[in-house]
Length: 432
Image 1 (cartoon, rainbow, N blue to C red):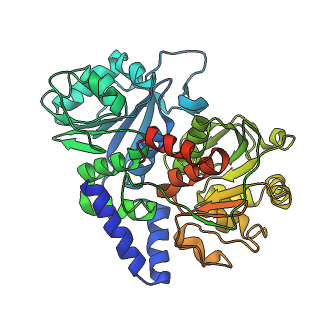
Image 2: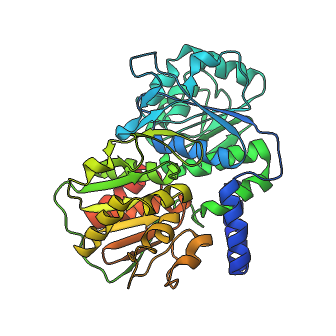
């Protein structure tokens, strides 16, 4: 795909630059996500019960980085939960609005995440169907990923005569008017389609390129640190290999805070639950509802950290996001949990800003090799493993950025459940 190739080229150019200039350039891009002062485009991301959270998060996050104003709207019928959406794998999201309340508003892009029965929920929302059809008739850009191209767009007759792709198991649901293509991302005229959670960032970047152009897409892609070769088998750098001991159902704590990076958090929750782990999402804030870094997703945690401190965990693993990492670092109860985990030789880990801003200052990287978000890697005392995308050193696992989040989580699955399980899930995600 052109977007993925261009992104990889940008990463290589950044890597060739001096460390200081590279760090400054990418830190600024990572912090702002917006460049050039373009007028904000309006993007609608509709969601419903059973929506795939990684696809929704990646779409909203990446388009937000490009400068788009993203609205997440629920297509579910009104209920007692207000704007709360029960997404797939037990993820609870709070939408910004209802699709029905947005009638008459115009958007530059409408992008449908997949998931089942989320795609059916989108399909059956008459207000959404009318909105997307009117949008397309007016020449607007629209997209769908995973089950949604076949279950939703094709059902509405919106892919007639177009090349399109979807989750492989749903290819047979394409109507005869659709030209099916087995590809990670397909762009045909104003329709962008893609295959699954493992292609979600590529999908979002393709829509950034359609909305803003190739230069903006490259600018957004760089700080994500995408894989150089999409679809390839993932690899990890492992040192001092030890077996991670756990029960038949590993107990995993994922702390979250205001400012946590949503792509990283949702990958941890989604993929580890797919694998069969019991994932507890704990808020370190004063309430269960937290606001993530990019789109300002409202994510509802399973419990407060105080409650989680009474439990035993096989693994504690933190998403990144600078604001979220700083909150983790200042939360004594979480730091104490991490120290106890490390002292007991139990697994712990972090991605992006968290290795540098949480683990390093609290002595949790002492004698360990680790990696972190590249513009922050200079904060690590030992930087010898920083060029690796995922590093496992004994009971510690670290990773670099949103674009390495799936590899990071698959590496955790491999340590907890074995390589065969991890590869099976990677294929299910269309990651490899």
